Image (tube, rainbow, N blue to C red):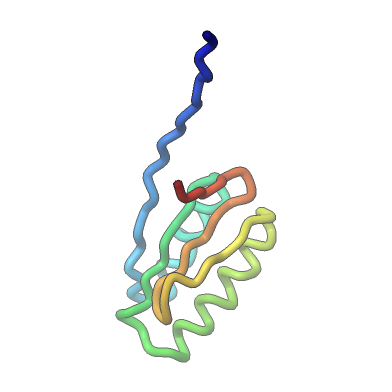
Length: 87
């Protein structure tokens, strides 16, 4: 009887509570470095949130990743080489 080996990779996901545009560089550096990131925009207004998301859209496109909306104020950015699955 053969046993199937299962590879498990654990990666921590940083949650960044966005306070302002000074957080953009940190966020871009994380996804450019291959790390997934949750941006929480609850502490900034809708106009600032939209600008922040517009900039981040360019960054995630550059690394061929994707973005998932978790709710109206929280967004999950996933670099291309990261796969998220549900069991």
